[in-house]
Length: 481
Ligand code: SF4
Figure 1 (spheres, rainbow, N blue to C red):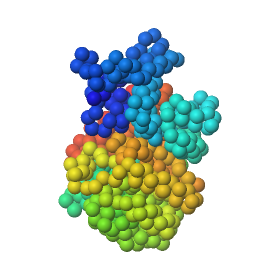
Figure 2: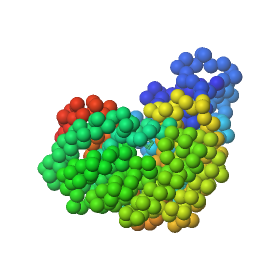
Figure 3: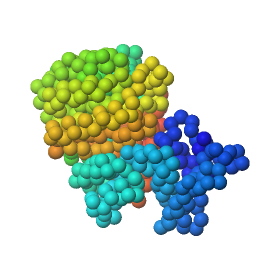
Figure 4: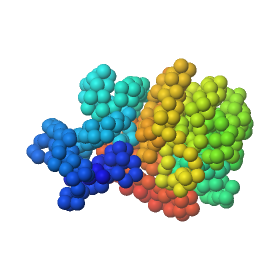
């Protein structure tokens, strides 16, 4: 057993890293070191003055020791990163294991690079810092710097405007890995009209707020659920009566998730196109029929191709396709075949997610029923996707990580240059306020002094409808502070 003695306020950060080195229960926090036997391993971390010291002992034999001098230690947050770096090095030394993302456990690795750029650090020095200090693998460090460079032009000066997110929490069936706020449309059809009325109220409030603050909208993203699960008349009402309440004159991008091909037809695509939407997402996740069935998606690969061609015929010039590496039971060959089939569709964007088992998903309770892809295979799939998409003329333009992601990897958005999903970059790098409407939507307010606050709408659709005034009041309260 590995015991760790660490100041309490760093327990969360330490646990995150320890979980990656010892998945399951191979470690414990030791308040009382007398419980530790001479066979156990003991890690201690001490802060004395401006020195942070980590030691690893087995019995009375010291196996590792490192001290880091701190530039500043004004608050707990400033100590968290050096602490994680030291702990990572110590655990890596002890286990012989190297993690692709080194000491980084956060969601937004490229944010570190942007902050280095803002301090005047160049791309090469930023890359060295990721490798030498944070212990990233060379390929992850290269990827992160490349993403930050590709994002830079799109996110600069974004702070003066806001982006809008609208959540439509209805879908046709539930994918096993889904953790989004979404309910089956056939069971909740009776709520659609009241839901749209509530949404309309939130949007009307936003219109007034934007006018009062003389603030423009930069991008709009309609997600869910699957917005195109709405019947045609409801979709039409959303796009032609609710959204146009907002000042749309200066928007750079307008995205609608049309994720499930079984929700699409020519009429819906025409409604979306005529409403001025510039980017849609048709999400295969895989081009293997057997997997689609296994993960609870009630459509075939044939329907994906049909929906994609229909969207092209309606004139959509920017289509994203989401894929997942590491879906249950899939082999590398399956994934390669998916990439080839997606390549034939020739989308502008492909977002490659690595499978993650989220707490709000069905999969968390049904894990035992599926064969989980091993780390090496998922890693190969992710590498394969990167190489394939680069060869197809795309580059990585946004990047994020999640908890419980297979092989501790990442999600990467690839795009043909000039077609990048701007909203994705803005939300990931936290450079612009996002006002979010609908059940389960979370707004993120970015203040000039780098303070970030979040405000959440309730997830339950009925509750959202009943408590719409409260949802608006929550935002007012936060925005006025
Ligand atoms: S299509 Fe998207 S929203 Fe619908 S169930 Fe699947 S993951 Fe959830």
